[in-house]
Length: 407
Image 1: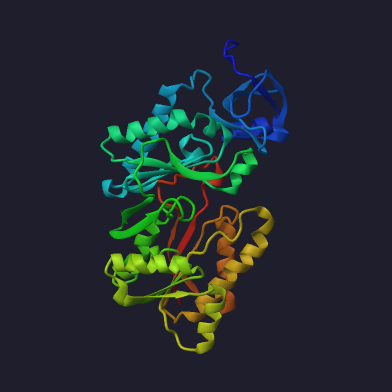
Image 2: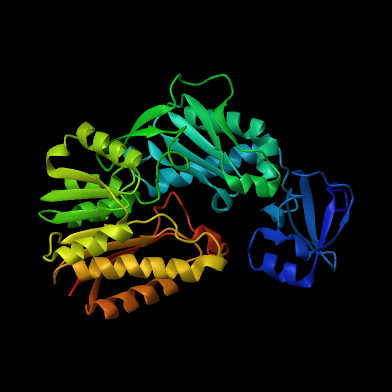
């Protein structure tokens, strides 16, 4: 390690050193033995082992349990404008490699640690970029990053009208930052509502008031898999939100699709999206609690649907609630399996990192046994490739998606 680097140091425990050398970019507060030099909140700091070995450089956070988020393990890196421009270019070039050109109009441009931007999410919806800045280090340099982001995309011929910040998320409080939402900078369209086309389906996206950044992009190709399977089938889409799975099923040739969500406003948005795509005649919409609806449908008798889609919100956002989440997942999957006829189809998903694949699959086996059915797996899928998974960072691996035939 070069003596003239000039960054303050965090001296890391042996346990923390092993963790970092295993590839994870997070260093927790309890693994920092001491600091050498004055490091400001959100500023760059070197991580060094007890034996003096350079481990990497990252952003320090005084408020978070994640005390240091590493950016680089290369002691020769200079964290200047050229460094960040290069990282943005790498991220965009990756999307251009793994996605066809027509899918780049709505995609995740930057996926936090997986792209080397710890705590930063950037989603593109047509002419708008929506950002969430969830680490104090990224917040500190956003006025450097955002113009570079706009410049790189526009230089590649992408029409980007402005950046909308969706920093109205509780996780920012863990970093000691306030919550807010609004346009960044002075250049932006008048309206925060735009239109995207995904898999040939058009959606209105309200980046100011929609969930998360406005639309869930990670299921893009899973929706396409549902569309291929839906032809001629009577489909029940549970937790439809703004209707994305239901619309893909209808576009794929389903005989009829019923889209259900507990939120009246979500159902109304799904209905408008159906009308925009000319699909309202083969769809109906219902505001109901799925935990009540599935047993009620079973009690009515008959098998009204031969394809059921379960795409619930995350039932757990911490390890403490995994057991109760597992019960919730099992309940809806058990009910769906009971409701389907032999030969019917089930699509089921979990978007929680804390519900790992092994546990989710164990739950599905238990639900199938209780329902007295067997599951024939068609596909096991994950998040779209614009949400890349780093094997050294398990937190980037969160979406499970399965297609089954019930036999």
